[in-house]
Length: 89
Image (cartoon, rainbow, N blue to C red; front, side):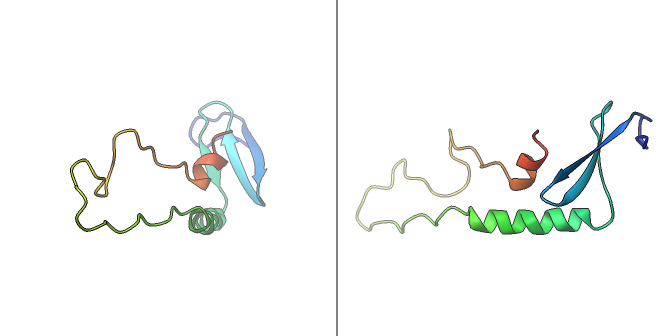
C-alpha cells in the first residue's frame, strides 16, 4: 500500500485490536473506517480509569496565599493520554 500523501510505503501495526497504517516516509497515520471511533471509545474508558481524584475542600480559617486554585500550576504536567501512548512507539 502507498501513502496517499507522499507515496511512501505504508506499514500496518495492530494495537489493542485496532489496525493502524503508518507511512514509513512522512510518518502519517491512517485509520480504516470505524477505527477512530474505536480509539475514541478506548481513550474515554482509559481516562475514566486513570482520572485524578478531586482536590480536598479548603479548610476554613487557613491561609490561602499560594494555595492552588485550579487551572495550570507551574511544574504540573498533564498525564499523557492513552492515544498519545498508543502512537508514541
